[in-house]
Length: 197
Ligand code: GLN
Image 1 (tube, rainbow, N blue to C red):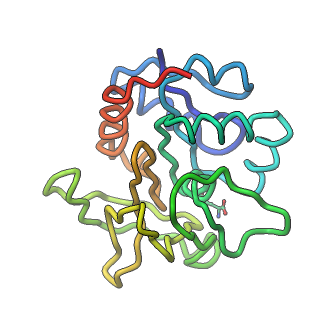
Image 2: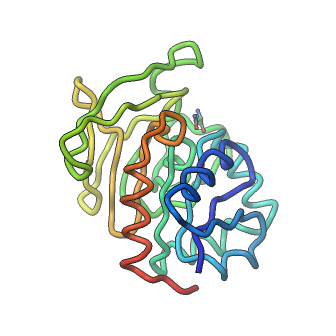
């Protein structure tokens, strides 16, 4: 079994590279049949409204929702986090998410592309060394429901990383700052769960 990276749109190549560098067998996922071959999935950063349209057009959205309900481990970064949120604030008209995480995220919470920034975050589940995180037109987790738990917050207390069961999500992009611990942590979940579709 291998780990899939949703390759409809966004920075899927960067995720595939990080996962391969950690020894994973990577499968780029664009078609529903490819879901049967993966035991975990990364949803990259990009543009969630476009990713949503493409996922529906390619017939991937429904089978993916079913896999998530069945326990497929999924890690979403930025747009990928938006795809995993049960509720999306400031979505474009008609935009849907896959859901799974009991959270409400606000898109573009820090403003436009020019308001992108980098910062160091404490992420206790990854150890004492802070995570260097890049936020690019990033969402913020406005509400963390009772089934999800926050893994990291900004200095002002806003939540930017969450976990719920086999699902993991970050507002930022570890795949572009040389930070591999989130992917390592996720591969640990994938190995432990041993999901078969
Ligand atoms: N603003 C984008 C969205 O709404 C996310 C940006 C990103 O993934 N870097 O999907």
